[in-house]
Length: 355
Image 1 (cartoon, one colour):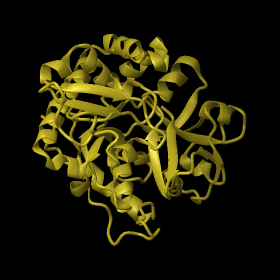
Image 2 (cartoon, helix red, strand yellow):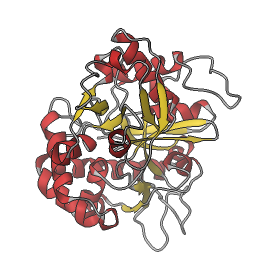
Image 3 (cartoon, one colour):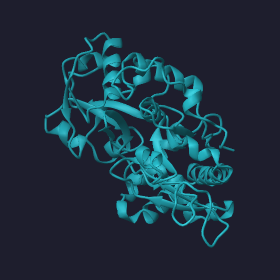
């Protein structure tokens, strides 16, 4: 689940490179993704766009589809492959009704005039890791990353995180960058870079299974406030003003949450469903199972109940991180200037559509 950074019209987008099935909530009449209706049927259709190839981040969608949870909830769902423009732009333009993204991406897009609303938060704990190969005995703390080469996709957001970690650990905060190839593991082992960004729930599992061994740091342990990794679903704000769309979203989220809950209680069975349902991704069954086991074991998606997904945004974790990135100059308006104030989590996100 490599971290992927894309720059689109000057906007830095951080997208999990792990399977992001595009599930655009297209409650649509005659294919119009902006209208809650359905031709020849009273059942609304929801299209969802993934952020990248299908992976365990999207497992609740595939489980809900396979086990009939969407049908039981009274909603049809189409899981779409990610578009080149990205899930956020696709939702903004009405190509998809729901897209997989991060709260920070929503902040970045809305700073430039988009109208996105974050409606479902999958991750409740940080899942990003900043890692060097374990064989690099010269790297023991983030301070040792000073002057080293960061393998990335050119994200101002990630750069701000890494800089703060290094400074918090006593380093200079300075580092070089190298463009990541298709496989960050290979880029590091080739010696073209010294450290990179990974997700513990995917690359971490891959490292455990197949190597190479990694030495990783968590941003929140090294001066970065809040939870940087609020991954979930967003819709277009104006789309929600139609009561039919809002009702369809509630049904969709209720069934999807049930799919994730099934995965938490039945990680191996859910992993096998994902592998079978997302054949185009050619997922490794052992890796997918290990990923789910990691998620369940460490409670990355849960809070009080290990078998139930809250799906809600923790605003106390969200705002400090948005404030941090704002001060770092990550969010810019259409003119490339800093907005007058930091993005406000309670304006960007809502928990009103999660049961």
